[in-house]
Amino acid sequence: IKAPYKIDNTPRYEKKEEPGVLGRANKNGTIVMNMDITDPEQRKEVDDHELVHIEQFKDFEKSDGNKGLNYKKWKNKIQRNLESWRTS
Image 1 (cartoon, helix red, strand yellow):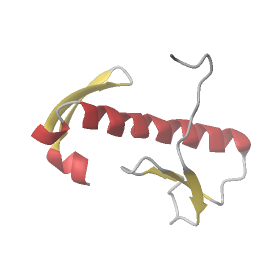
Image 2 (cartoon, helix red, strand yellow):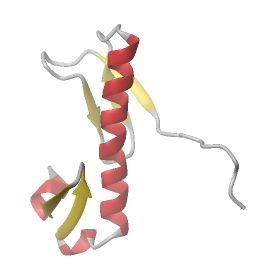
Image 3 (tube, one colour):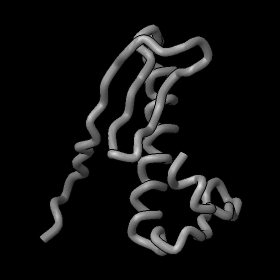
């Protein structure tokens, strides 16, 4: 049975980041947001962007992740992901 509502249980944290870093998506499924972002629209934009990466990590693990080579469609582009992408 699928719930009629969407649940997002992605853990989110805030911390001071180096200049130019707004957010990070970690391979453990967490998002770290720069604590200096105060604009709600920018926070939403960064969060949405990092969620794309979280989904990419999940898709990679579900597919041929252990073979070190995978093709993905992201923003209407095909990307070739090598093992170095998975471990970077």
